[in-house]
Image (cartoon, rainbow, N blue to C red; front, side):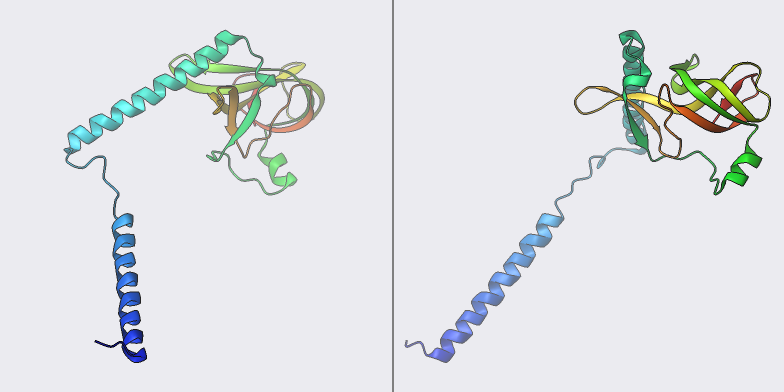
Length: 193
């Protein structure tokens, strides 16, 4: 059988179409290779599995915090990592911030520490102690005020301690002069930023 130019072109077209179709089938199969890790589990088994994972995560966080406290590392010396979880109300200008604040204080960060809630070892906060330089609003109880911020200790991929803080909160560096617009937490001299 003799191949003409036309029959060769038709054959080439069939080869190209066939190869394209085979590639498309393989690509679809490759995309559908996801295997549900919970397939075959009952609701109770799945819930138990995730309860165990949560418990493991909570225990790991508590261990990291305990190790940090035992290490004696100064919280002011570790790298800060922002968390995208925001619990702060949005304030859009200085007038709104002043009006919403119980106290407006210009001061210097004299110390920082991590506080752990006794009833929940994973509930931590960063407490910055400010030496009051100028009181712009409110009446703090003394020459210092304490500012609480949400924050916790974690480990970075290299195993170094990092402080995870709300990205909407300011970073109070030790020794920094700052102006704080703060809400009272009900304790004398203690505020939340």
